[in-house]
Length: 456
Image (cartoon, rainbow, N blue to C red):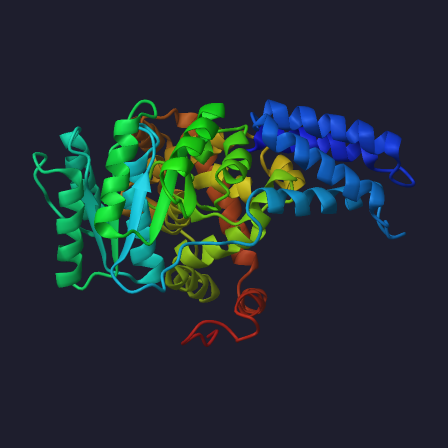
């Protein structure tokens, strides 16, 4: 998300580099570019005008330190204003209320409410250690009930089954009683959507909300909806006392205008952002980090958190001990590392969090091409026998042809992977002993290596 906006703002900031100071002329030129960038990003007009005026006033009134270039000063001002535009300090949802905490999801059909309900349940279970009950009140679309039931099984949540013949408010009320009896921490209520805003939809959502007394009323909106997202946000904001917004399909929108508009239109913070189709693809929305991404500064903090959360540290330590003891790095180890990268969302997800300059350098090859190569390499290794994975040196011409056929690739692809593997193996050998111990010690904050590590 925000790819186009980031590119334009980066060019705008470049025009200010090397200028001795910020003047009305050069800031006026820069603000015209920012305005065009926001318009192209599909940001709502009522949002753009006050934003531009605020940035311009602060830029012209800023006392620029002598050590800063105008470009750096302008970045600082833009960053602060973008943070305010998207909601100020990170808000999140309130999990301190009396359980069961009722979370109501509302929005138009196709916004991704049902999938988001499952994603939110998974996030609450894995990150917050909560017991979650899910219920669907979409009686007009029985497939939605079945979909949520199946998703509940995938994410480890319980599902409250109900008849599509019952009124939605009654279903929600019965689910609340079940949540109380089952001592659940959170009840997530998925509501019906429509292709467009209508009074019947709003009345139904209000009835459900009144029946359960929701603690959180979250508006689920498609990031790619553009101005339609703004219109539906306004309608739902008038019908319900919203507490926050969940932005879905953010990974598929290069413009990002929805994120910059919805917060301002509803007056409510964006609390989560859907960044993929998988049930783990939900991130808490942090305005400061998002502003950094928009300005090409990356989000290294999120990247580090993701590594700590998703990388198997025991597997990493096992590999490090193996290399230190001189047992070598084999194809099974390489596959393990590739699968760890895939688990983190692939090359594209990692590049998205790097600062723009680093991402451009690392992304000389397109991110989607990198993800395809990742899948191809894993398929090649899976087509090898256990003996070949342990000792790739035995892979001769006929074996290469068999492996290529088994993985659906060309022999050149197998050759390329083997060449890359040999280079990695050479690097691993050069790190044996002291060098690797020093690296492991540094990674663990000087702790001297993993538990049980002796270096012998």
